[in-house]
Length: 433
Picture 1 (cartoon, one colour):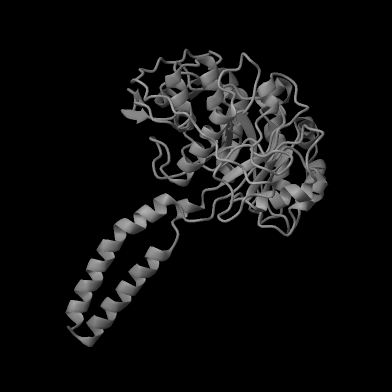
Picture 2: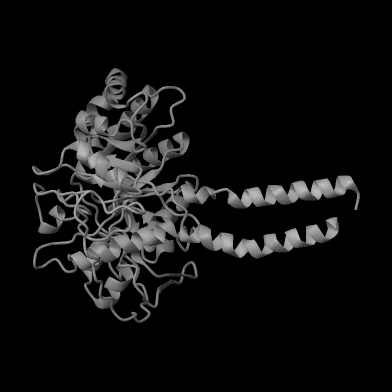
């Protein structure tokens, strides 16, 4: 081999080794958390900011624009998803000047960084009178951002936007929402903003509290549920819900619109008639979800791509109305200790409160194969073995976070490639000798 050939071969090998060290694009997917404040016993925002920094979370979703909360994250690496309240929509829609004032008042020019703004929360179900004003409000806010801003503008949707979701390949939006929803989808596509959705497997289990349903919802061993329409098999409710939304977006021609989970979680306490609202189940769901997202396995319809997800929620919210479960979604207590091990604390840290004993999770036996029953179009689409659309909740919630550490999937890929690299290096050395 000529000297020039040897040099080119060495450069190629060095380049290959460098590429092996680079993180994959998929590893940038984040796990966030919602920071709800419907409570009278929350720690100071500064304490919460320190708590978040003790975790692998780097994104937090807020339901509003509390200046004290926003300023608490200044100087940190945590970015925020801000919320424009439903009550602000009419004013933002009617006045570009009001939108510009909102941006100037609430979106910092530097720190903390703002990744996105959600205009309203589950607007299409919370207040139908605002539906026609939603996109004008979003457009005015978007136009008020600096020309080179990376801030995305979207709105949060309940799973009830789907008329059909079981099997996931049949996912479709409710026809009666087309007048309001189609302009939203067109705006998201035009601006490169994500479709924000609130899937809750917990409500699926509520509709059918059988052991096999629980295993499917908690990422525990089960036989899987086949989708005859796609030929795919689902092993957890979270993936099934996401793929139903993906199918609905694809059917509308919006394959370019990304999905971001704005809320998902599991209550650790509830009323006596709320099956499954226990610390054990909440710990199993959240830790299972975190592991699933970090694996970068993706969903059966979109494999190999983890969906950016905000988990609900940082703290319990003792002033929330409704069933008891609404007040007990907190991953952390106001003492800054974990409610249960979530897998979100940074390596080598134990949070800011006393160390907690691990939660013991009793896993049910593997479930028998269940054949899905299609949801009838126009139904309430309450999640369960016969429906994958869980009703969202229009109550205040918020979070966001990011995982930046190498994960098991990356390590596995690296291990599988190393023998190939070693073989190439050995061959190259033989040629050079």
